Amino acid sequence: MMTAFSSPSTKRRLWMSVACGLLLPLTLGSCTTNQQRADRITTGSIPSASMNFGKPLEQMNAAELEQAEKVAGSAYDRNPKDRTIGLNYASILRMNGKNTQALAVMQQVAIANPADRTVLAAYGKAQAAAGQLEQALQTINRAQTPDRPDWRLYSAEGAVLDQLGRADEARQKYRLALDTQPGEPSVMSNLGMSYVLSGDLKTAETYLRKAANLPTADSRVRQNLALVVGLQGRFQEAEQIARRELNPTQADANVAYLRSMLSQQNTWAKLADKKNGRSTNATN
Image (tube, rainbow, N blue to C red; front, top):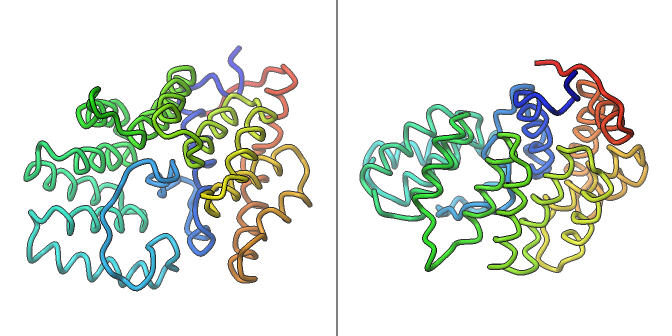
């Protein structure tokens, strides 16, 4: 009999559900059951170029992201081989849940820039978002260089390995990332989320609290902490964490998503069973 997390497809669905907890408040409402926000698996896992839209993409609401997609799409139509335009357009497409289209864009950018590490990294990220996990690993490994290792690539590789159910390998990559970039909160957050997948919520909380207390931690790390606290049944504390440093509208959106996440597919019950050593049949 398999445990709740022994099926690779179950692990992937749960990881993608957990990944939505990484989203910034104004985009939480757009998480869907098939987890179209796969590009947000990690916080800061891969560097991306930026276009001047007046505010960071992660802080945009759905209407602003739609407008940003139109602007970036028009720029891409005029110059599809431009590295910066392609990177931004693909990133916006992923944020709008258009993973297949984002992958197609990144394929063209990678053809035009075959030796660019940032392009290869973004291409691997697009492959992972589209569910091409093994291909994503190959692309990320091509982008990584032993003489100048990039912690973001280690972290991204770890996220893909976690989706594949290879937790030990994933955690090795996160620790390599931390060796290269000590105290990086996004990596510590990913490491904590890795332990969520194995049902070790106490260890997950330990890493997430350390990450959230670092001065460079952003709201996404703290929302992950809120999720893990909530998964342990401390809902009031989770809500307090979710509401910190956010305006009321953003906080309400986060709390509403947190509640739906905790009730979705009996996630808490599955994690509790795993934690207590009970076996349940895996569902696909």
